[in-house]
Image (cartoon, rainbow, N blue to C red):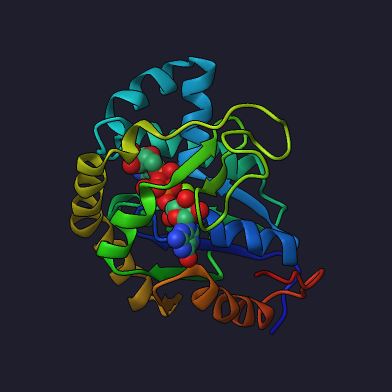
Length: 223
Ligand code: G5P
Ligand code: MG
């Protein structure tokens, strides 16, 4: 059944392509992108109290404590209560999932399943535009001009937590703390799993699935 207002979640290990697939979803469907990582990095850029506290955890590849993340996300959800949105990277702990469940019914949860060895390799080539969260890759999705954001012409940076040893730690944290979140949504029959080695392989299946829930606004062709 196609609904008017939809609340959806996209989950997956660090580097599984949540940001990349979300960008494609946003082009083809009318949704707001609420990404916990982008919201936290924006707090860091602004130098807020939450940003200063969160940076210590993010740079080490640890999860930011639930109380800080919940404060930020619940405020954001409240501000977008009448919108159709896609929540990226939240919830990441069972406690976050249970808290969200109490205040906001969710229509579906997409989980991206990409092998860890592929993730470790691809993250080495990631560059981002910090203020917007736009994501590039030196080979898979290069900017028009090397090191420069296509939209603002501002410089791109590599994330502090993308160092190989930190990425490995993030993947372990994911296995330990976020797998129970997947079980939670599986049990609630909300989880839709997409497995593959690349975004071109996964994206058409995600698009097809979302088309059963939301009317597409356009169809974008990708290489
Ligand atoms: P984030 O920002 O949520 P992660 O760790 O969940 O970070 P991340 O790293 O942002 O996830 P992603 O969005 O899943 O990864 O992946 P992506 O950026 O789209 O793709 C990765 C790279 O691969 C890109 O360069 C992309 O171009 C490339 N790529 C995509 N597809 C392909 C392909 O097919 N082929 C190739 N070759 N390349 C491809 O969270 C960061 C931190 O914030 C805190 C935590 O500290 C976390 O570690 N945080 C939270 N803490 C507590 N609770 C929460 N809910 C939190 N949310 C964030
Ligand atoms: Mg991301």
